[in-house]
Length: 256
Image 1 (tube, one colour):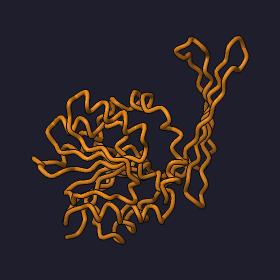
Image 2 (cartoon, one colour):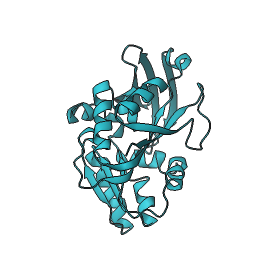
Image 3 (tube, one colour):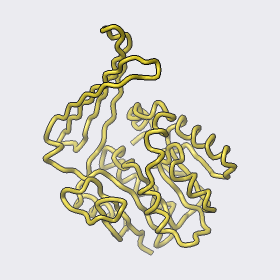
């Protein structure tokens, strides 16, 4: 998948500050990753690091962090936050399927369901090849992806919520999700209408496409690229994975 393909699927991240405010307090993935690290002195790579939600607190614990993301705006905010904390973190704008880093490291991780941005078999393969080329023998790769619950995906989901913005104007937010079984891609579109005195004075729309991957597919991908599955959890809290789990947390290891 080319850089342009990813850029065409990044509308939801147009406002890095808003994204940061929405997700900055989430810690479950951070806690899991930290449990997997024992006095690590080698660099650790976070893919799709966004605004540094995990990279920065890990660096504050003395870990050598490298954060990679394709979105310049998200990285710029991450750099600003790191500078404010006086942290020396290497933030790089790169396509995760074409990593060009100097290090082979013991751990690479990617959270926030970012795996769902790899919409084709080819891009998933390229991701694993890229990760593999930057891991040490027996190095570990940890990532999460939403669990495909067919009963939910089979329904065209529509929702609406209303709230008042900072200018005390009514905002009507309409959300629609449609799943395409052949491609295994969920297309999500959100429309925002700003209303004043009963009239729409501003309207904008953003969208995102997310690929769902099934457990047997994951097993094939891992084996094909020389990884073994260490753990498969249903959440970052290490809940057992079931058909009803919201997430698949994949913890795998590269063969020697």
